[in-house]
Image 1 (cartoon, rainbow, N blue to C red):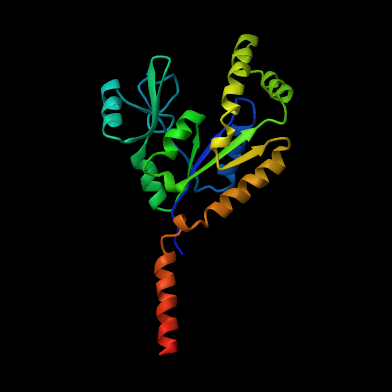
Image 2 (image 1 turned 90 degrees about the vertical axis):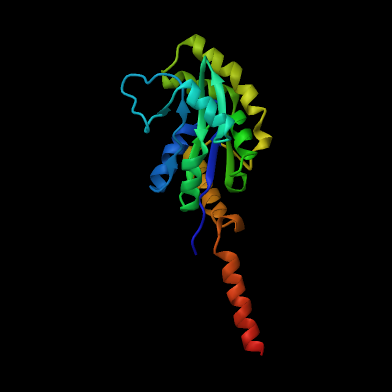
Length: 213
């Protein structure tokens, strides 16, 4: 049978392992793709339009929001960011899964969007706050002030865990990834993801009735 794609949302506080799990998931299934966000900020050096972001004007962005063409959007540091609905809907109808790496606020918007029936939301937790801090420090990407800000923000993000379909504690990356692929594999079999299921059942019913006649 054919299937519809899933709109897979991964959320977590910074340092919990979400990005690593997302990249592993895309290696696990090469047909899975990241959602490319739209933004009103100018491209940074090396960024490619349509690959890193869809770079559009403030007027264009506001028009898309007013038309209901954004699955989710936010205003961050003077610029708009959002996820256009059209390419995601096209992928889902073609049976391709789309991965979103977004926070709980974006997740809430998508779960109330026109594509809500195809959403699979997963929250990734660290095994402890001490381990979360250790991971942020060991990455070597941020200075002490930035790490402190990320830690302050982490509890606000963690407090929204209950709004997700699944919650994974990432205490062992390999084990957590195995659980993640199990979840995705099972969710692909939901009734809402199988458009051919009802016609198939009707054919079975017709065969049964013919045999009883």
